[in-house]
Length: 267
Image (cartoon, rainbow, N blue to C red; front, side):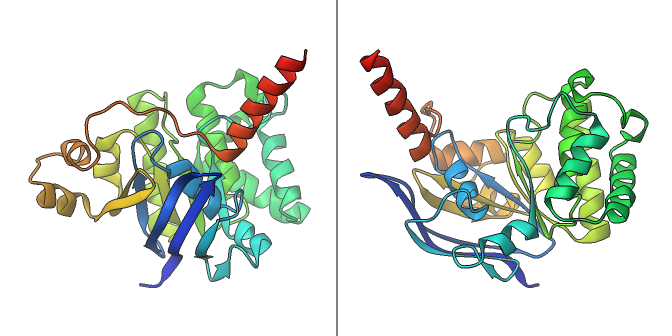
């Protein structure tokens, strides 16, 4: 099976702080891949580099055969993303959110209409297509974001803690949609989560990052066997420790914080 994501010696520093330190990994085409780590481990920074939001300090990223540094537009066209925080426009309808996304990706009017209907039916929101998103529950918004992320038929979909705050029923439905899509269309799913049972049940392979380095990778069964633990959560704690971690702060966040402090001091 070909690798759709190929990462070699990837590093990102913010001043004297190394958020990601010389990591290398591959994700196979059509794979469901979990990228796990404690708060502050480097997950978000890595995803931002994979999705061209951040430029690496050093190292190489190939996504769907495109170099993230040399061909960022081609890379962006190859993936969809569902952010950890809601990113739909609450003052637009579900259909309008989808249509705007399709316009931004250059889809023709006819193709947008066809795919919007297909995807909204797929996530069981077609009957609410004309409802304002502000009227939606958290689970409905998540399903809409997944449909929107798939509208341009990406090769990879990135899901950054997609089930955070959702009830078990909605989580189960969401993963059923994604597993079905993975089987039918071969889309690669790259996700992060803090729900270890979710990663153990869904992911075909897992990489665990801590303190900016990948400390282990393999199937859930391999990670449990290598640590002598009976659950992925216990294996995760064995590999990363029991200490409570602070949230990861990016270089951009640090600059914004410094700016607020500076301007606040001047006022």
